[in-house]
Image (tube, rainbow, N blue to C red):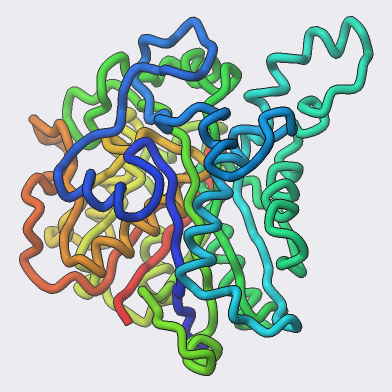
Length: 400
């Protein structure tokens, strides 16, 4: 029998605010965090983005980090989220011998700082701490170092926009195989010029706030942030008397490898992971109360994700929406941030709506959710995260 995986803590940082309470308020009040870029030094400041509303200096001050220390923004976004998750899960009460793993999904890494110093590094061949922190794994190590020797296993997962969803899935496997007692899993990502310019070159950035699942959608708004959860087996959580906030009941990953950046026209990868995640949870499609769609707002993603949902659910697609117009597309952090949003929806019995929707996509047999009131109790949410190269993942978050 498959071991149940409980979520005993969660922490989130996004354009909606620092912490679960701020994010919950914004979602319930239908307030978007997408604004013109404020802190990133870029020629594209007019582009709407889900930038976290705190400078690096302000984040350092809140965390007690001297501004002279070399901390990249991805780490500064991640640490408050990890801290919130650890505190809720009462990790400080664990026995010193407990094996606690940290799995973090990220792709940009320290690019935001490395790109500022790279030319000088090439010209002078001088050592620079930020150049050395450019590597994705360096961010995860920096997060781990902040919390001292608490983590006995530290690993980084890089699969583009499915990275942090895959971190949760891998964390469940570590627990079920007995290789860890507790897993802190999630991901983080900050905006960078490389990041913004790359997506702008692909011509998929919307100059307005994005409109997922709308006929006239024009692309994505980039975002940044972090989301981490504490995972334990049900048996382990009960033994130490910690209250779970939900379950990671199902998960799946597939790679259709159709194109470096686009989904397959028939949505095969998204269909397979949704189908397999629901099966892994021991559920049927009729049990799913809400789909947190990847829903980037690009013509390709929204069309093909809709095809995949129609293939799995037929003419009974459950309430479906994307939160990208709230947070921006937080890329590697999207899977864990949106898993936490799903947990908040289950705990508080509400459904985040699809902002800015006007006109249905003609090829779809459904409309995204625009009414926040659930028509039945919210117990199981299917949350999608699709990465470049067709690396697609789906999670099922459930009530306890």
